[in-house]
Length: 252
Ligand code: BEZ
Image (tube, rainbow, N blue to C red; front, side):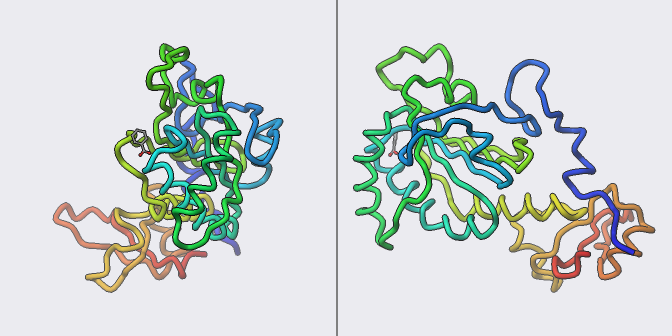
């Protein structure tokens, strides 16, 4: 008989409602749809563009700035890896598409691996998308001084639900390995009753269980025994049996 223990996404879905009650975009919400101009032509609907895929929407503060130049190059190096995992990528700033296209030549020249940038870069010149996604305070809408979007990452599932966000200031470049790790962890918890520990997959090596994941607290001891016979419970002073590790290759 198959395993019908609810996945992480199902077990904790109620924590993350599809719609926020106060208009603030939060985890679990269906992300706002929009149309946009991009370096790959018009995008009439972000939701339709996502289709049945996972998606990353990745904003950068401004074209022709150093950290952003490295970020887009490093993200391009992950494009094939993400595509293999059914994950699309779109990036965005408030610069117009003409600026993005001119800047892309610099991005490619500065990335030593001879990349090509195969994802669309959205030109959010009227800042409407940036405001909808809280990357930009509406009070700065007409500010011509420092009109910078934050460095935001939105990871969206095929149901168009926001699964994870990262917000970085302009002064700190993002780590693309961490973004890929988040995709892997989210996809694993979307299909299994597990959660990934700190630093996963570099965890619990000292007890010979490197890369193992935790069974969710919602998995009953009976289900744990039946469906995850390879799990191991770590002993702790409280005597409570909640640290139940299972190797990912032993998940049903
Ligand atoms: C950068 O990408 O280097 C950057 C952009 C905006 C402000 C500061 C740095």
